[in-house]
Length: 79
Image (tube, rainbow, N blue to C red; front, side, top):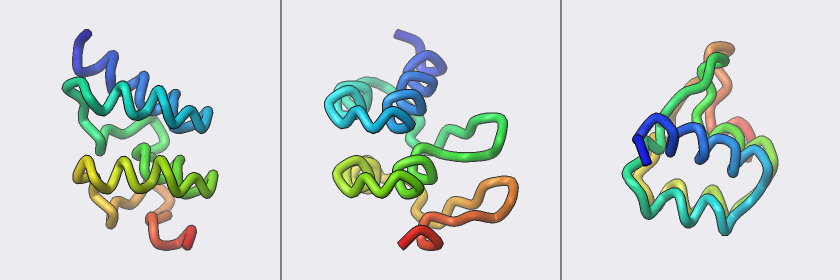
């Protein structure tokens, strides 16, 4: 799979709260800090959904925990 496709799969899995799929995608080459058109990274979606299992996976994958989206929401805002 291409990196871009994996990035999209990661966003979709996080948005849908699918921890098993997130785990699978993170085993591939993927940009854990990839952004969508709103500037949101997977960590933003996981935090907004309160999914601590996925948050932990993303942090272990070395995501940027200080990432800001286009309206300046940061990961720590949610906790």
